[in-house]
Amino acid sequence: EDDMPEMTVERVHRAPVIKGDFKLLPKKVKNFITHCVHLMAPRGIYISDGSKKEADEFIQKLTEKGTLTKLTAFKENYLCCTDPEDTARIESKTFIVTSNKYDAVPHVKEGVKGILGRWMSHEDAAREMSQRFPNCMTGRMMYVIPFSMGPLGSPFSKLGIQVTDSSYVLLSMRIMTRVSLKVFDVLRDGTFVKCIHSLGCPRPIQGRVKNHWPCNPEKVIIAHFPEQRMIQSFGSGYGGNSLLGKKCFALRIAGTIARDEGWLAEHMLIMSITTPQKEEYFIAAAFPSACGKTNLAMLNPTLPDYKIHCIGDDIAWMRFDKLGTLVAINPEHGFFGVAPGTNSKTNPIAMRCFEENSIFTNVGETSDGKYFWEGLQDETPRDVTIKTWLGKDWHRGKSTELAAHPNSRFTSPAKQCPIMHPKWDDPKGVPISAILFGGRRPKGVPLVFEARSWSHGVMIGACVKSECTAAAEFKGKSIMHDPMAMRPFLGYNFGHYLQHWLDLEEPGRQMPKIFHVNWFRLGEDGKLLWPGFGENIRVLDWIIRRCDNDDSIAVDSPVGLLPRPGSINMDGLPPIDESELLSLPKQYWLEDIKENRTFLEDQVGVDTPPIIFNLLEEQEKAFRANQQATAQK
Ligand code: SAT
Ligand code: MN
Image (tube, rainbow, N blue to C red; front, side):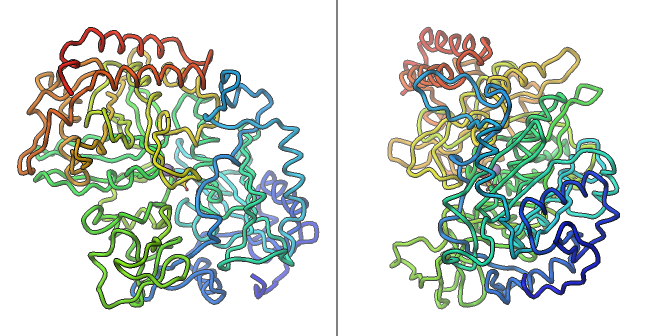
């Protein structure tokens, strides 16, 4: 940024405005920028217009510096490798700051460590911030990024302004959100979410910068102030910590706004399925990070004459319209997808999304100018040489290290997805018929089951668990609770969140059916019982037939409605052990129910809506009474 021409037009405090027209900005925006300049003392202010021309200038500069590497086999694809200490979200440094602790987190049992959000007092936050933000942008440019989550001007949408000293963040925000100067026109005197981000590396830099990636891992903090509609993030450039429109705004802050305004901000993909009879159904699905939301949202159906369209792969904002239909929008503008495992077999559609205009973070590189990661072995020529994300040589079959970081990502514009729904950025949204919950559950949990009612579905969502993934700092493969797939993204007390979900059920509303799916169940031989990926259309097909109330395909069970044996279309599949795939091992479930009850008692305590405990108890009774469940393995 040092070579940026200084065409000083105006100054805020001592910082020249080197791009944009400060005096034309809405008053609240001017005040916000002035506050940020006073606090962080950047050497200049750059108001981003979100244009391609602007992005090209930054790409060129970052390529010259070595932060980005052009992947020459493609048009406008770039590789970025971060400091190896800055590769994932840091849940332990992520806080919700509220006046009253229990607005942010539930009443956790004494002696138990809460995992459903971390609270910080305003006093502590003020102290933590004062040890980080003052003058933290010294010698750096402050970029001002006006953005809209959701189509600009849609009644669904919310506006934000992010300031940052990272040009990687500027480039990524341009892909992931709608960055435009029009935001200021739509905003006028209205409110916006204040997003403050700094890498925490003022110049002259203390210590060594690794990989041209300044950051400050010791001092990372990501603090959310729902009452002030503000986010302050320090020390990390990694997506989930730095692209503040995404998890911080669209889930944590928007969650609170949604509760106040009577809607939902959820960690869900949105997709549509069109049947051979040309009926279209929209569904939303919540799975924890790195459990295949992107793959499902871009599913390549193996059943003939079914069509899939993608509306979003990570976040859904949903509200009931006047007619009582739940409608959803994807507030984002791009994909920030997990790279490893993505290939022409698992997700051919994603492969086409990132043919151009994309940024790959922490993946390997081939000598023929392409990206490389675990899962691409079969489609990478044997004669190319490969470098890992850490710049080391990588040898097929020999190297024990990974070529790509397990949480490496591609960042691509949504409109490049060849199956993007024509209405994906329709300001009115799309009508949702079903909501799916799921996770990685190697044992005990059937391929699919249906909730008996809305509240039963909420209970099922509250008990979502999954094997840990690389999206956050956890190690190993233990099964963790991730209720509603929202554990890392809750912006307020999870008990209140459950109550908010329950309260949405009102006469006159068509409540979507709720399902639980599990693509990851293992057989006794340790192999997956279900092929997954494109074959998941078979499960979606069953789900939409249930949305049409086909009662002939469902049987009652202690967990809800299961597919009647033979009702999932298995045509053309190699033999599947359907009875094992759908079985409900009684002992497993009795323990699971007990464990869920303890989890809720410990973690959510008195804030748990009583009906959730009642439904768990009913489930337990049903298992105890059910002979069939005993008979099954
Ligand atoms: O939080 S990220 O946006 O970095 C990805 C995820 O965990 O879902
Ligand atoms: Mn996610």
